[in-house]
Length: 259
Ligand code: GLY
Image 1 (tube, rainbow, N blue to C red):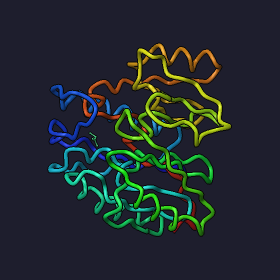
Image 2 (image 1 turned 30 degrees about the vertical axis):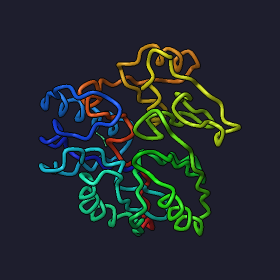
Image 3 (image 1 turned 45 degrees about the vertical axis):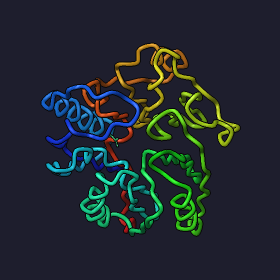
Image 4 (image 1 turned 135 degrees about the vertical axis):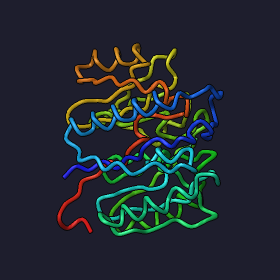
């Protein structure tokens, strides 16, 4: 069964970490409404949504993608690159342990799930301010026995690798190639974001549609014109917390023998 773990918006989100954007006031009520609409859409597209309770003292905890990577065979718990976020992993690990065997990366390795783009058996891992070579080395060791290859990708212009590139269809990447080294992705087809929408590369492909931020109409036009079905979603309040669409859920299959 397709499963999506999410977490309610923390009231502390107004104090979230920010790296590449300026702080603006966040309307908590609006942020919560937008996150609920995201959860409803995931459910409509076929996912069983498990919404974990808010963590009142952990501002960025709704971004459940960052403390863990969930693969078919195991979940890897990550030491986040921001100290203020490290406590997010514990309760998430407890939930994930119901569905997967757990492994973990150790400090001084630091890695955030937003930096790991899985395409089949390849894990592209961004080298960013949040994720380092030591963690990528440990990840490669952990997943090699399961047949995954880990490929480092230098990222310069944004928070995470997936802020700059996501896979929206078989062999097709949506990207802002100015923000990372595209060389490791040789052989994939590209859809480039509109230059006026540099943050528009983060989308979720699910249930035959591409969930896409409503705030990027020009890039949406580019995707739609290629005959993909696109479902726009307003996440404007969450974008003030440097959110993309991928970072608010962990989506994976749960089979009887998953654990
Ligand atoms: N506000 C998301 C992050 O910086 O991790």
